Image (cartoon, rainbow, N blue to C red; front, side):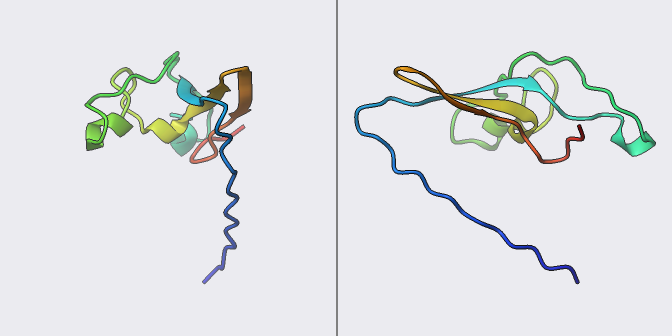
Length: 91
Protein backbone atom coordinates (compact mmCIF):
# COMPACT_ATOMS: atom_id res chain seq x y z
CA UNK A 1 0.00 0.00 0.00
CA UNK A 2 1.30 3.41 -0.96
CA UNK A 3 1.03 6.24 1.53
CA UNK A 4 0.27 9.79 0.47
CA UNK A 5 0.77 12.94 2.46
CA UNK A 6 -1.86 15.64 2.18
CA UNK A 7 -1.11 19.23 3.10
CA UNK A 8 -4.06 21.54 3.78
CA UNK A 9 -3.33 25.22 3.38
CA UNK A 10 -5.84 27.66 4.75
CA UNK A 11 -5.95 31.28 3.76
CA UNK A 12 -7.31 33.95 6.00
CA UNK A 13 -10.02 35.75 4.03
CA UNK A 14 -9.72 39.50 3.95
CA UNK A 15 -12.86 41.23 5.11
CA UNK A 16 -12.41 44.09 2.63
CA UNK A 17 -12.17 41.95 -0.52
CA UNK A 18 -15.04 40.19 -2.26
CA UNK A 19 -14.07 36.91 -3.91
CA UNK A 20 -15.77 35.40 -6.94
CA UNK A 21 -14.94 31.91 -8.20
CA UNK A 22 -15.48 31.07 -11.87
CA UNK A 23 -14.75 27.80 -13.62
CA UNK A 24 -13.42 28.25 -17.14
CA UNK A 25 -12.45 25.85 -19.96
CA UNK A 26 -12.52 22.08 -19.51
CA UNK A 27 -9.11 20.45 -19.25
CA UNK A 28 -10.18 16.81 -19.09
CA UNK A 29 -8.15 14.50 -21.32
CA UNK A 30 -10.80 12.34 -22.97
CA UNK A 31 -8.24 10.20 -24.82
CA UNK A 32 -6.13 9.22 -21.78
CA UNK A 33 -7.46 5.65 -21.91
CA UNK A 34 -5.98 5.08 -25.36
CA UNK A 35 -2.71 6.92 -24.73
CA UNK A 36 -3.56 10.15 -26.52
CA UNK A 37 -4.53 13.67 -25.62
CA UNK A 38 -7.84 15.26 -26.61
CA UNK A 39 -10.00 17.87 -24.89
CA UNK A 40 -13.63 18.49 -25.80
CA UNK A 41 -13.44 22.26 -26.29
CA UNK A 42 -15.94 23.23 -23.58
CA UNK A 43 -15.16 26.93 -23.00
CA UNK A 44 -16.82 27.51 -19.62
CA UNK A 45 -18.46 25.48 -16.85
CA UNK A 46 -22.27 25.59 -16.80
CA UNK A 47 -23.92 23.80 -13.88
CA UNK A 48 -26.57 21.17 -14.66
CA UNK A 49 -28.59 21.92 -11.53
CA UNK A 50 -29.27 24.38 -8.75
CA UNK A 51 -26.59 25.32 -6.20
CA UNK A 52 -26.53 22.78 -3.38
CA UNK A 53 -27.67 19.83 -5.53
CA UNK A 54 -25.47 17.12 -7.03
CA UNK A 55 -26.21 18.50 -10.51
CA UNK A 56 -24.42 21.73 -9.59
CA UNK A 57 -21.09 19.87 -9.77
CA UNK A 58 -21.55 18.55 -13.33
CA UNK A 59 -21.13 20.62 -16.49
CA UNK A 60 -24.17 20.82 -18.75
CA UNK A 61 -22.02 21.34 -21.85
CA UNK A 62 -19.46 18.54 -21.56
CA UNK A 63 -20.83 16.34 -18.75
CA UNK A 64 -17.66 16.25 -16.66
CA UNK A 65 -17.17 17.20 -13.03
CA UNK A 66 -16.44 20.80 -12.09
CA UNK A 67 -12.90 19.83 -10.95
CA UNK A 68 -11.85 19.27 -14.57
CA UNK A 69 -12.45 22.96 -15.35
CA UNK A 70 -9.80 25.63 -14.76
CA UNK A 71 -10.62 27.54 -11.58
CA UNK A 72 -10.31 31.32 -11.60
CA UNK A 73 -10.62 33.30 -8.37
CA UNK A 74 -11.34 37.00 -8.74
CA UNK A 75 -11.23 39.62 -6.00
CA UNK A 76 -12.64 43.10 -5.88
CA UNK A 77 -9.33 44.58 -7.08
CA UNK A 78 -8.70 42.07 -9.89
CA UNK A 79 -7.47 38.49 -10.16
CA UNK A 80 -6.33 36.81 -6.96
CA UNK A 81 -4.91 33.65 -8.53
CA UNK A 82 -5.61 31.16 -11.25
CA UNK A 83 -5.11 27.47 -10.59
CA UNK A 84 -5.22 24.50 -12.86
CA UNK A 85 -7.13 21.33 -12.07
CA UNK A 86 -4.92 18.33 -11.39
CA UNK A 87 -7.52 15.58 -11.13
CA UNK A 88 -7.25 13.33 -14.12
CA UNK A 89 -5.60 15.75 -16.46
CA UNK A 90 -2.32 15.22 -18.20
CA UNK A 91 -0.05 17.96 -19.49
